[in-house]
Image (tube, rainbow, N blue to C red):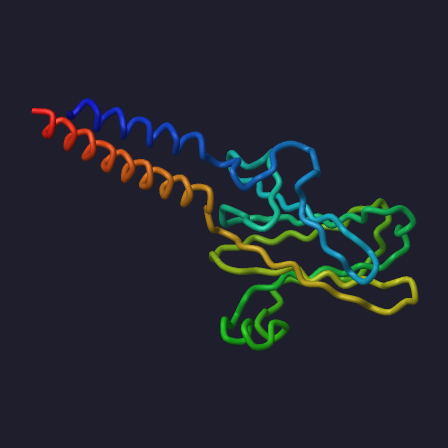
Length: 192
């Protein structure tokens, strides 16, 4: 009986190891699962990076699992945008009630990147974030007629969703193991 419990705990721990850091990160250089944002008539790819130990070669989209330095790179998906002006603002959620009623007033600017041309095709913004929470990237860009268009991209920082899911999965497995063990014990007691 104790051996079964130990083996079940071992399986839960093994499952937790399998559900480690890469669960919400996209390892390597492939861009098939990056986030995209449409600003006016232009589609942009967003890639997020963190350089804490173990996260150096991964890129993130909606969830940055650790606090600390984040970098968000924005690049166009089409050619011919080298002269297009783009500005980036990093925002932090300051009011949950405003987010429900008027999202534009819910965020406070924590960093602004002045408008500049795409040039080589990549523009980025970086910031060290020390508090868990909801953040947003505001992308401001000229359209073909010279009008400024903007779009918000909301993401989480400091929320280790993959670790939370691993713990929940372990708890579910333990619960299933407990139920399974009880059923076997009930069958055994009926048989004797």
